[in-house]
Image 1: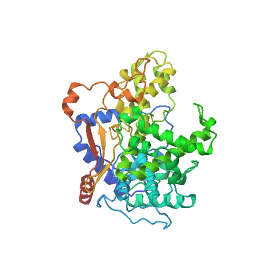
Image 2: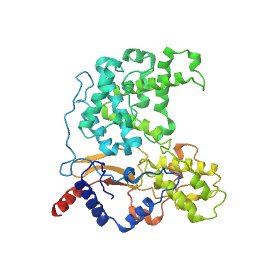
Image 3: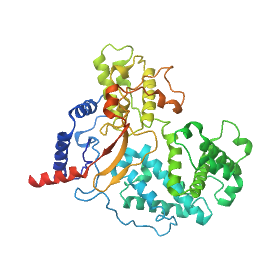
Image 4: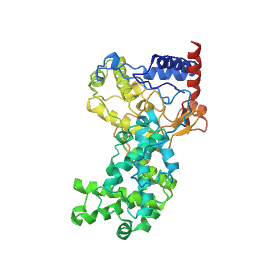
Amino acid sequence: MNAGVSLKHNFSMLLLKLFVVLACFHECLSDPQVHHKGYMLTSRETSDFVPKITPTASPQPFLPLLAPSPLSTFTNSTSPKLSGLCMLNFTAAQSLISITSIDCWAAFAPLLANVICCPQLHATLVILVGQLSKETGVLALNRTLAKPCLSDIEQVLAGQGAGDGLNQICSIHSSNLTEASCPVKDVDEFENMVNSSELLSSCEKIDPVKECCDQVCQGAISDAATRLALKASDPLSMDGPHLLPQHTTRINDCKTVVLRWLASKLDPYHAKEVLRGLTNCNVNKVCPLVFPNMKHVANSCGNGISDQTACCDAMNSYVSHLQKQTLITNLQALDCATSLGLKLQKYNITKDVYSLCHISLKDFSLQESGCLLPSLPSDATLDKFSGISFICDLNDNIPAQWPSLSLLPASSCNKTIRIPALPAATNAQSGLNTEYIVVYLLVAYSMAIMMLLWV
């Protein structure tokens, strides 16, 4: 397992020594074959598409280890400073708040944002407002209270270990707690306008795999949201495939209101499972990576490959840039491989450079951790002694597929059956387990401190 420290530029020389000791400790424990593979993947040279940065401003490599004091446990929390204006019941939702704070823990929040942290945070906001509606009869906060409530939510999460700036990381605004442009927010009016019994029966329990394909609950939510949006729109203008942008925004805002109503009918944990399952359908549809300029790859690999070494050097350099962005799921990696391949083909790169340069699906995820997250919803876990852990899919060493008309997936529903089987040796080594857990140990801290005291 990889271990390291996220260093801030204003840390003292003592913490720099701590980093060196931790690196040595990691080297001693690393499996030689795994370490060699990691070195080969992370030592790819940068190329012309990466901007030149002075040594003092050079970004540090990702070394995922938690931020608290080395001699403290991972369960320390602080008392949040609340506004006193927010009516949201944080005490009743303590279990939900705890899960969210762990999913968005400290420095991990940006790395887990797309798959775990932000989906969980959005679900938490929906559930908090939905549960409050059972007392107020309203499925939204008014604009006056939304801002202090959002601040209180961030304070409560930060007090339990969540990272700072979650609002920016997950694009959360105070309007996410209001009805926004949806014309309906009263529970009674809502239930008079939609078929609430059908909506509840469609969504009270979902299969996170089947729902993404069958869209039973998603269809019921869309129908209900459209009914609500019609209150403020001309029915004829809402009909047909070409909706005006304001109508699309209104329907999306009404979907949030519908989700809050669903959350009010379920217990918080059950509501969280449903909401995360629904969000996951959208998460796995899109590659979240940003592809930088690929002219350098085109110059080395386009118009036929005359120099395989130069081509693979350019390709590996390009992929190393992608590996610095974020953790993604295995299904997202399939999308990313297809998207990058299609872009490369537009630069007249016709040969399968994935096979030529041994590019695998794992190469599209954050490389220092060496994992792809599972495609099904998952949460990080916290142990007060061993720290934060999250699940990685072992089926991530498979080669990336070079896109062709015959291999392009028709939809996300059939992606799982398109993944080729792992080699027999890999399957034998992993046995029946298809996942492993990445854990960052407090032991490394303690040993490093002890070694520093000897120095």
